Length: 630
Image (tube, rainbow, N blue to C red; front, side, top):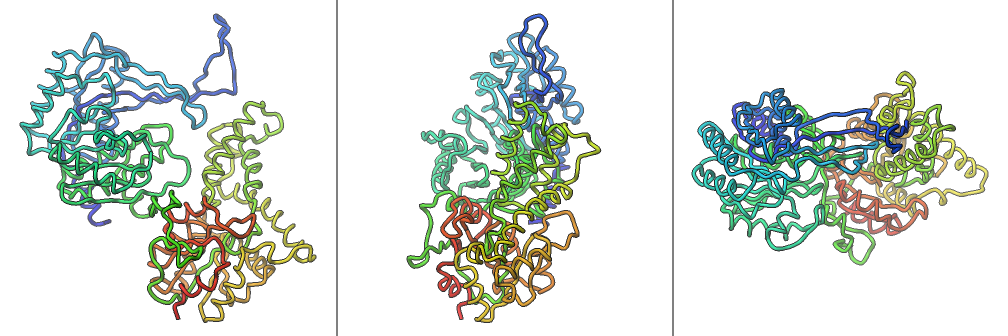
């Protein structure tokens, strides 16, 4: 879509879009619990805020996103109080270049809406809300409608936002706004509302799955899995009622749209590491509306919205926005979430002829002649237990010289944070984990800036600790205390042998240093089967080592297409296979037992694009037959 995406984005500068809704301020307060103090007056503990920031939320975040994405003229229509936060709202809008003549002050019964969010690390604490008891007067509603009606002569589209239960959407304003929509049927109106969607018609609805279900009389909680079939039925019912298109966001499952004739879908974008979904819905609504206002088809508009949301969720402790440059960058390299329904529901699995081999999407269309194998967790288990190595490395890096003397509360908080991250990041590249570690070290501020290492430096410390464990295991192999079968996935060596004997060219790929992976393959007895095609990390570059190694294999051997397969227990190798048109075989291995299915790996591998998933190579004859077909 790159050419089409560029054309759509370049057209944003010519657009004029208005936003009417509940304008809020998001206040982020980062608490510091390392310096406890009590109030002299009350004796009670105080909360020390070490960082603070303020941004536009609710309809304000929609405006922020329209401005960030490059819409030529953005107009705001809302209500603020005669208070310090209202004045800050106008200043924030001014800085963005937003036309704010439609922002009206109601002196009585109205406080500017604010969500004050205290944070400890990345965890939001109990929120403080201003403006929950607002009541818009009919006079203010009429003034607001008059401002919007006056501007309708020049606007290409209007986004109607509802954030608050007691916001601007009174019965009086709803009736007036519906009348305005009915008078301007040639304009694009998109509704993004939490509670009042059933009160409007004649406009495009943007909903999440739970909201769509509720409009159709079904109760679903936010982020609950809802099938495409169910959502299609909901969208059809809602569209029949409103006479317009329906867009349904599906969290990490992407976005679907019903254009009154057909259903269009875009898959979710894979995001590695911590995420913050606050404001992502506003980003989606803004990008979709701008795309539609510029003449894009709804199928293309939801793809642009999907990219924009994929940018926003990566921005932590802020109500994020997405720029055109960020959208283009993500579109160029992003990975998608494949088959989420199958991945998250093992009942949907389809196995090959009473075997343990799960067919996700297809079997090879022709015989595979080249196979790239991942090493650790796919063939070898020499590195099993890496989590126990990484945890103390991360904790010591964050605490620095305070490791032994840190207060118990701080130490336990960091331990919990590290364990949570390791659990979340299982299956991703070490360098990415170390990039997050570097950010965590900076965030906690316990190590002087000049002593903080970069991701490569922390990776070196971790690798040295990991290699100490590997050396102990290989030494046991040499002494005969353990044998090769104790450190290989069941049937892996025999599977390699059978492919080799059939003439399939084998390649071994690892993010481990070249000399180490060669030594380990030799110690485990299968190095010769690769005939010199063993590729490890050469020490150059700062990105994903495994990704670079596999790209080197593909480049040097000119591999791509239907004759190529990548086999591994991690997402990197499978995603690269999909990008070059190859076949992806996931190994959902249990590295402790060395046989049997690891359900967590199965989920990750299917989402990464696996065409087939196996627990191990105990049924290697069937797998080899499926691959080679000779």
